[in-house]
Image (cartoon, rainbow over all chains, first blue to last red; front, side):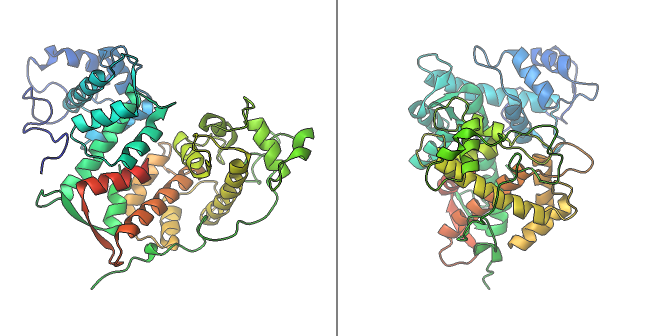
Length: 197
Length: 229
């Protein structure tokens, strides 16, 4: 079973950077333009927290003409990739995040047909389907209700939604031993798995 | 054999679980704040007796009505998430977080407009009052917030069998970074309501009451998304 957004072998970022999260792993990495943004906000420990991520993403211009990310969305993004549960991201994790967010942004841009910076319920449904999610109408309604202001979903909120969906997908996928798209949930595990997102 | 989880039946004394709301006077200051805390100084967002309080709609407590009017800053006759956030504070005077306010609006919004009217607001205040009592019960050292051990105990008494790691995670998520993280009323309400909602969702699928359900990926997503957000 192919789960939506499942990273290709090697992770989302196909740049071939491996190794432990943190600063430059080898010569040449420091020339990476993304590293410039990262290093400008990161402290000496080579890690960035939610505040710094917010600045970093804003400066990198990933939001383009859209409003920059709010702090809660940045916190969510960190928890999505924060493998060592430190509440911070190293450079490699940041690169991975950047690639993922860029991918989601492409979907948003393609469905923001009037270039307003927001999408409506219908466009959201199409964007989610394009990402591979098959959600019930009630689920799409719930998402729209949660993330929209006057029926419109802004880019930042859309990203927060994508992060949550991806985290839930990971949660499920890890328990799908046969990768058939089914999981036997015990009650306690279900609760804890879902509320940990 | 099958293991029936105690939490699959509604926990005792759970607000909203088929129990008449307690009748009683509202505290003189902001809801959700302990009456023992300094009321005279600082934030008091509830108004003094308003001359309009006499015109409370039938069935609506006059104090709740005048409160409603002061919170409904644009006099639309409805309270939005933003306006509600102004009205609800924790024991440490921080505003209720956005997520909890949204949850409250969704619960008491009969109009499906994303806002609540005076009847919804009145019911909401009673609801928060019940939660405040429960919160005070679990705040054993009366610190005004719920610590790790108090949260563990609360879960246990409510009938949930959740790991210490889970409680720790919730504490990290809902509290300010500090050597002794603890949860305010808004976080406590949010956590408990999500627990109940997800338990209901699980129980709906677990018709044989086995404590186990087999879920497809799409069922899982839809089930969680409609309850979690």
